[in-house]
Length: 156
Length: 137
Image (tube, rainbow over all chains, first blue to last red; front, side):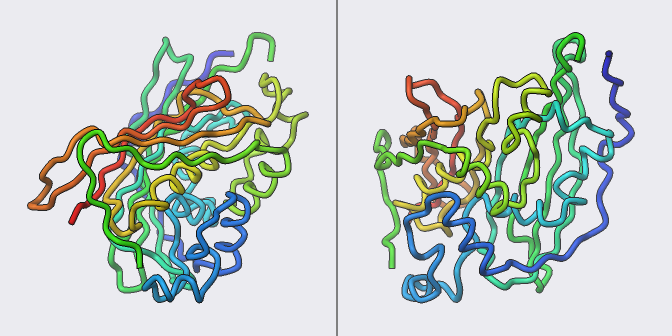
């Protein structure tokens, strides 16, 4: 099966915003699942003692917040009708402007930055940027994701 | 409160080791990170997609690299960071995270450290490789 070439007209397309709340229990669960040993990230008292107003959203959890609104995390993948069986994460970056905290309300939008192919179309790349803004409308984190769709094995 | 980090070129961060990554770890992380991609939690699904077995979410290993940074550096001093997922992290792997200051640069009137960061598994193979820009006092 030959994968379809990307429709490059999709580059630059932006999602409608989604609003999610940073759930304190989810942050504690994330800390447990990642073997986090710094109590600032799972104990409110430790967070306050360290000068935070609540448990801070740890680096990388911005990506999980966008996953809480799948229409954002999967925006580029849905737009190109990706077959997620062949999906891999190629690159991930974060630009930090302000810290988000437990129970903050976050507005999320996603834009397709680029669509390109390598190895004669055997590897197809989807690059998107997800913006996370706080309730005041201030951009706190940019979350840059590049996904790759590998070609299915022959006969698959 | 954590003091601001003020390194010199060549300084290293204390290494962070996490794992071994069990199937239970993968399942918990899928739930905790809202990542429902079945390649990481259902070995039947992974094999049908041509993979030898389930494998770690790249973002799980990147979270370990986050621990490397925040163990020494105030989170609000992390200006930006990025990684490439250069190899798959198989189930049962133990991950070692390291970072070294490659350069100290000026950026918008602010002094910043540029760190090379990497996550390696058992035999020393790099699975994640990237860099971080850290604001300095």
